[in-house]
Length: 252
Image (cartoon, rainbow, N blue to C red; front, side, top):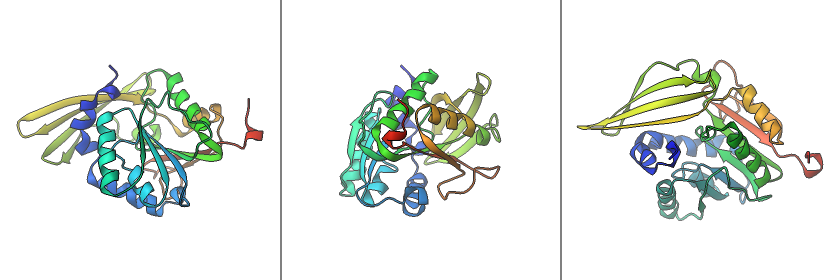
């Protein structure tokens, strides 16, 4: 079993991965970001939607959202959140390497470094290829990543984060000459300790730009956040926008 296929990881560490502050952050960006300023009725595909962190506020503002995730536990939480808000969000349990619905979406999003999970680089490239196919001509892809440049500032230093009822200890290890990384987590709550880890690729802006170009995207732009700020030494995230070209412009 791959680490991301283990539902207990997502459930046990949900308090850190999907904290209330993260939900509020997503709602704020949906309300204010020029990159997420969408007309009502915009068809959005949320790849790796988790418990609906972005799907819910997008649906609240009138988007027609499809959320895709491999974790049934996270989809159940997303369904609870959408039903509590009286929202209609289509939720699909699927592997993002296989999911494709050609010419269906105006916007595809992948948030909180939900891209790069797969040990085979070709499988990560396949996700981008399917994302382009799922977009309508002229549609956009938004990738939100913790990039190699940002990660390099603090990788290797163990960290402790306060979580509800305890603390989360995190230690990162760089793998394969800065190609991938492993993050080992220990959640301590009372007399209970839960260990887990994840591994994934870590990309520079130049690397992700090359991958998007290879997948057939054009107009690739890199930002340092959802406000559209520059991707420079002050950036805290790498947010990448890319466009599926009009059919006449696409390579065969």
